[in-house]
Length: 185
Image (cartoon, rainbow, N blue to C red; front, side):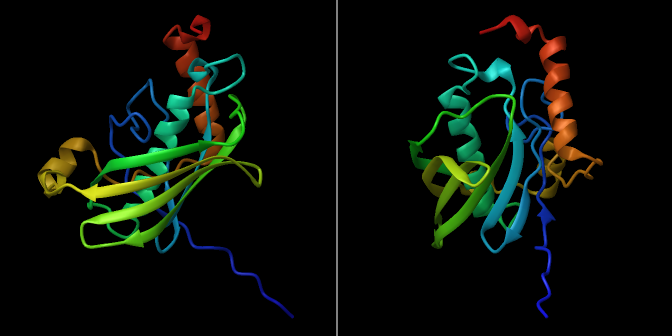
């Protein structure tokens, strides 16, 4: 008999104002990121219509921001205060990324060195890779924050709410209706 063990997921911290993870940024995503293994991170997202380029298709710059963040998050796995900056990122757009549908972001570390990390970020539609990015990330000693600065950023693990993916979708709808972006194209 074979026993399947569910993978362990450890939630990473969020900030208050980051465009991708900021819990108080009404214009951003407010995504939650989970470590699924050493140097492995994942998140779920529904890109709202206000971020489309062509009708029904997410703007490439928005998608690049998500790939950048998931790559950075992979580099931070196990070291939540090791802030890094992207020095180089190459994006491969394989398929148009639709708005309004559930997507999965996956980040993995390829190589870790003393002051740099090479990581890969992917946007998945089901099991298909829609976008893949390769990033070289650099440690920035000026951004290694002490506890008071982390507290000021709101950098902490916020509790999950029941139905996080559903909340993300409803938050996106609420933002679209409250900030007038439903008519923006």
